[in-house]
Image (cartoon, rainbow, N blue to C red):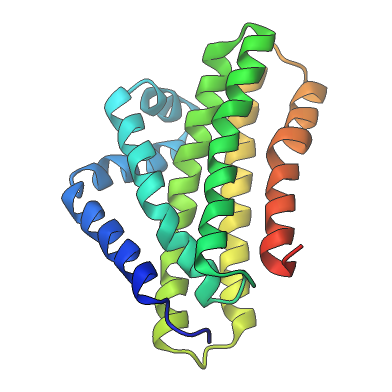
Length: 205
């Protein structure tokens, strides 16, 4: 197990946890959005049309990001320090709305890609929240086999990716985009950046 974060990192995490407590009322709204997204296309559309739910999801996404970065460090998924891990995850999270904004502008389909952006945020909140047990186990029980923690995080991430592809496919096909376009979009602007960041986190290059 890695050494505990230095005092500065602990202070950042403390502020993050306090912010989560301060905005605690937003958490149930975020989890309702995650549940709706996992339930059906209709409930997903209702959740995406609710600005309060979507704003709660975005806030929780930002607040859960430092905890997810710490999860990757504590479980040794990331060979980098907490600061670099958090920075790379933040870049990845910021890249998606920029990519959606660009694609929406190029194709004059801002609403469609805005919906995809919101779905990705909902799924990300779900993935980060469900990954937190790995942080607790890895920190409190350092003798836990790393392959067990890695397997758990991989299953959670894969489930999130499948949910995003499932809901995203419905949104794209409803707007008459071709399946070929959707595959190209997923490979080029969704999974490729994730693979690049994952490679840097796991191998440091």
